[in-house]
Image 1 (cartoon, each protein chain N blue to C red):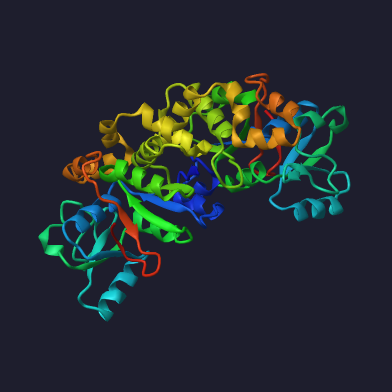
Image 2: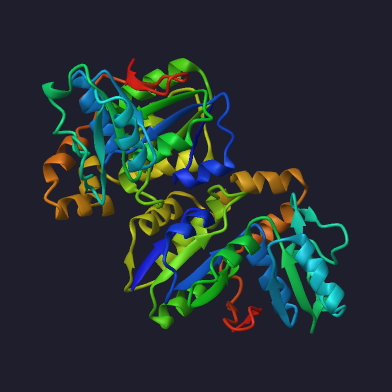
Length: 231
Length: 231
């Protein structure tokens, strides 16, 4: 088994994902918020690349609810933003259409993979265990920040690589491991994205997102329907 | 001054290069071979993205010579491959059109920058000094391997970042510095690209490319004509 990593989703254009497990990581905040929503009882999450698609889907099925952000803020007309703290009992049984700048795009770009998993710091260790059990080659996909590198997502990927035993790490996966070992998890709030969120008074979100291994749940995308739910 | 870094040239689509110094790094082997050719007396190097363009340019001007590779091997019909050891007295005074898989593409993708510099391990320290003197924001561009991360190019970028004093490092530049500190220069021959070259019996090339700071020359692209030469 090889554990590979792209530093940004754009690199996926140069990868063959077929037969592999893809692990999409968007610590700040989509994959963390998706975990929060599903743990609050949401029935499923479906990602779209464009805001307009989300509105179109709701037009056809008014029972759907919409979540996501543009410029880190809730999209006007959406029911929820992208904060993991927003998702409480209110979403129980609901199906959510989600659109964000980084994370949902990365999921959309990973669709050639055999299996797509959504990971965050809160679920890092249990994701590593799950992926290892699948015995497939794996590609870690930090969602990044507007097409660029993000420290927190790469750190999380490095953590998963470290807790994946018996796999061969590619050069880039080794680099992520090295980055993970050089920063402490609490330093991730000083990342560029962490600073952006702090400037928007979203430090409570940041704290929630940095709670390493607070969850034992893994999010998987159904390969047929495309809906994401807890395993 | 900010020192930024992309892990692969594809990330440049998300960068604003205007007003910046771009430093393109293709240790194995274009930027090393270009240095070798210019030090052997070549009059200039012009990069093209496609092999066909190189042939067309020579048709119009038979004094041009062609260099470069596909799959690491000399392009049929070209005068030179991509090995830094090929360029001797023979190229003195000649203008070379160059086409490779990684490095020349990265140069082509950096054309929005105020200034484009070609760096390699052999010129790493002197490039750091030169770029620092320009007092512009700088973006380090490891050329990578077929659109993916390459350890040796990122290591070289981290080395340049380390020797650039007084600049603010972006998160990705800090990551490259961390990678540079975790590997020894001699370990770079075990990189994926180093292994590919070894499998093609090009270990002499690899040794030449890894000779850190063997040169005091900097390659700069003329912003008007596009030709690259020593400063």
